[in-house]
Length: 266
Image (tube, rainbow, N blue to C red):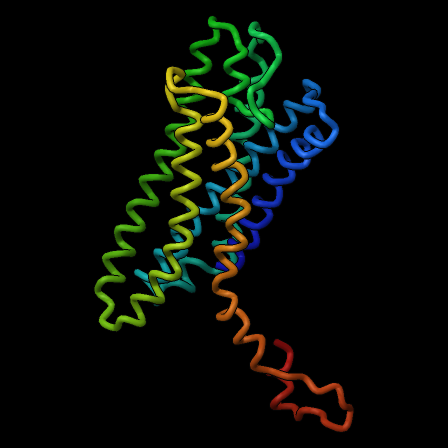
């Protein structure tokens, strides 16, 4: 779990650094310009990190499924090599998705000006500026995002159905509380990220408005990466316990024997 949390923290940091610093710069210097190449780079890196985050959240769902439903097989199904392969697949799929979307989006001719109604370069806002002849590409992008998101969504729902069935069979209330405390923070972040992101990309144009677009963009691009460190730090007390079990003495007169030394390098 902590290996995936490290990868999730990197994706959170990357997505925040892609959008927020430029928006703060524009606000402080009262300018709203971005170069064409800078906009393309921002779209690529934002899609790269946001897709990696969604993939990692899906993998973390599998991690919870194995740890709760198949605890005796955890070491076999989620060994170090399997975790490295899953993390590599998440980053590779994110890179491929970002590359395809960026290339497809910026190959469209822009016929409706160059003003984006957003604080960063976002694919739905760029598609609004494209010509009407590019409707097929818009549909293709929407279908690709829908299929990818729906596949992960089905996997997540199936995993959590199995998880909750297993948790409700736990006889002790303390055991059920511990299992729910592990799953609910992850499920809350995932639900917020998935619902707002899907609605932002697939909402009908008839209900689109600048204020709604801004609120949705903040909810899926800024809030989940900002909340992840807070939510997962709620379990810090459990993390601190193993680190507080060993105290090393710096006094050379008090040296551990050979048997204790193997436990003093935690």
